[in-house]
Each structure stands twice: as structure tokens, then as C-alpha cells.
Image (cartoon, rainbow, N blue to C red; front, side):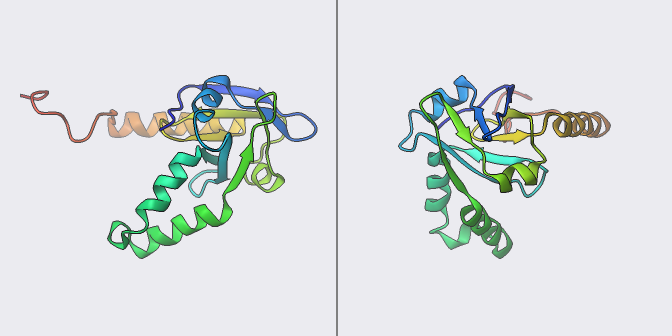
Length: 156
């Protein structure tokens, strides 16, 4: 499965083309579809994106109806119905569809934000506001990322 790390900003040209960061592209080029799968984020004003492998795994998981509540299944259905397969051109660029650009309020610059098995594409200014809010909440709630469950022996 592809792994996406870091935060990288790239310019969008007049034809809505943007270069996908080379580290992201290198992970995606190993997959059967050479490009990204993108759809509107339902929790932020951004674009959610992943490789075809992630969508294939999600598709395979919905065969077992007990995996998801009705609401989760309906959300997954939206992912598939609004997903766009966006191939790389010879220069490693993609053309972001207008409906996705409008959803994320992206016009001149796109910020690629790695999230491990997925990534998001943001308007850099909106991401900065979200980042500040996330850090504030983490400090207030004393949150600290950790593996779940905590491996045996760590707290002993």
C-alpha cells in the first residue's frame, strides 16, 4: 500500500494542472492505475485522495455487510460515487476537476498533505487555520499520537 508523508505546496497552472510531489508519485506509480483517486472531503474543505489500491481495499471490505453501519455504508457510497480517477501526464502532473477545486477553494496553490495511507489537497491558507486549530485542541486535551493498542511491555 502507498504511504504518503510530508506537506508539499505546488502551483496550479491556468489549465488546472498541478505537479504531484515526487515522493507521492513514486508510491502511486507502483500501482495498477498511474494517478490518484480524489473526492471531496466530507469533514474538511479539502480534497481527499489516495491510490487505486486503497479504493480496491475499501471495495473489497464492503462485501462483508457487518463491517459497517448503515451511515458508514452511505458515506462509503458517496466516496465511490464522487471519486475521480485522475491520471498522471508525462510530467507527473494531474488536472484537478473544477468541482474539486471549488469544494476546497483552491485556485493558485495546492498543498499536498500526507496522511499515511491517504493524503489531502488543501488551499494552503485554509490548511494553516486547520493546523492551528488541531494543535490547540491537542494541547487542551493533552492528545498524543500512539499505536493502538499499546504493545505489551511498553507501560509495564
